[in-house]
Amino acid sequence: MSEILTLTHVSKWYGPVMGLSDVTLDVKPGITGLVGPNGAGKSTLMKLATGQLRPDVGTVTVCGKTAWSAAAKLYMGFCPENDVFYEEMTGRQFVRGMTRLCGYSKREAYRRADAAIERVGMADRADKKVRGFSKGMRQRVKLAHALVHDPQLLILDEPMNGVDPVGRMELYALFHQLAESGKALLISSHQLEELEKLTNRLMIIARGMLIASGTLSEIRETLADIPLSVRLDCDQPRKLAADLLNLPDVLGVELSDVHSVVVRVQHSRRFFTNLGEYLAKESLALRRMESLDASTQAVLDYVLKR
Amino acid sequence: MSLSLMGYRSWQGKLGSSLRSIWPISRVSLQLVFRQKLYWVLYVLALMTFFVFFFGIYLFSQIDTETITPNRPGIPAQTANKFFVDIKNSIQKDLKLSGDVETYRNFYVLQGYYVMVVLAMAGSLIIGNDYRYGSLAFYLSKPMGHWHYLLGKIFTVVIFTALMTFVPALVLYFECSMLMEEGYFWEHLALLRGIALYGLAIAFVLGVLVVTLASAVRRTAPLVMIWIALLAICPVMGNLFVDRLGYSANWRLIDLWNDLYVFGSWCLNISPVPVVGQRGFIRRQPSLTPVLIVLGSVMVFCLVYLHRKIRAVEVVT
Image (tube, rainbow over the protein chains, first blue to last red):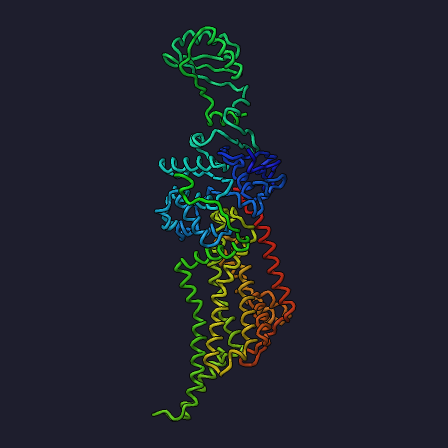
């Protein structure tokens, strides 16, 4: 897969305040989640990626063009978190006006704006003034504005804020369609459970640095020294619990209910190898195995604590 | 929802230059301004000077007609003529509505007071709110440069100002062409060029200045206060230094509106030194060169500031 967005050793300072420090990353087609606590540098990264800021050090390119240039912006669409815009205009007028900025003829701009409005499910409400829009409707109008020129890279800052559950499902479907059609989506969100439904590829930012990137399992792999909780369901939980304590990486065992054992392990990869061998030797069948610490939130908590 | 069903197709045509984004930015900004009733009220108020001139010129031309009309029933011809001549002289002396070069200069000078007030109010709406509410991100994520955005906003103020100055002056010129002596339009083409130059100078200088101030201040109230300080207090100071304290006429350069007046007088090919007052008191004016230097410096300063500002759209919150 070719990189659509590339940051190479990028640093950005706001006077004495460090916004981003020596960040190198690339975003490929598909959906990538951008997570991190407040003030971590997510907004700075997005502003750099959308060419609103110039890096003090390093380079930012979109489809091979410098992100700052107008040429690069043809390949990107940005949906900012801010949803206060021109209240006196209708949603359609706003999207049409913004589409004209892309250089299309008036007719083509209007056609594209109308199509984008339809895609985000606002066709029947776009002729009302923005002043009367709910937060969810504003999100959709912003999304239409970002989609309108068919960009290769979509950068979405908290796109699900205020969108109702039905609307979320529609937007998830749209995001997946866009990703399947070869576009790269970089989605920043605080709602990790929402992000989990969209992707398992994450970039975690803290204190202006990229501290982890990859799929959830890849990130979890890098945390080998951090204990992992695994729930095992079987017919003989007491025997399993007793035997597991003999395995070298097991730190503790807990019987959670009639059929379940929760085991806390140190080196997950080695543990799973040993567990497989043990189960084969004892001819024990597991009904279910689930890692309790592999959720996005758990991984994020671990990464941020490091 | 299939992508192909949504009319989403790749663009086969040639995209226009980024420069073409200037007009849509201006159009959106003008729409924003003219959607507010307050600005319609202010705009109509700003056109009051225009209406005074428009009907004044009409009256002036009618007096010419009336004075050559022979005896009217019930009024002795001599009395009627004296009455009309007095009115005519009064109009000519105070407002200079004869359709000559002073008519237009006078119009621009008087219109300036309204323009200042309206621009101060409109400045924060046209550009200040983009900074204040973060709407800048919508523009800057589109395929255009930061300067295109600024040029679009400056162009908005230029159009807005021209609608209050240059366009009404043009209407007055056409009115004079119809009401004054035959051949007025073609014989005064140099005057038309001067009207255009003066009007555009006002529009561009004020456009750049308003955009700069609105970028710096953003909120309406402080913007109005600074604007008033610039364009109302500076003239008072200039008058004080030059007329009362007898300092060099160059002290009047601090009055930007007066600088535009001197430049406009040059455009209209008329002396910028009017004789005012009962005793023929002469208002000394600086020469054109320092005026051009001041206006140029103000423009350069504003553009440099905007350049630095637009590079630093980020705000550490």
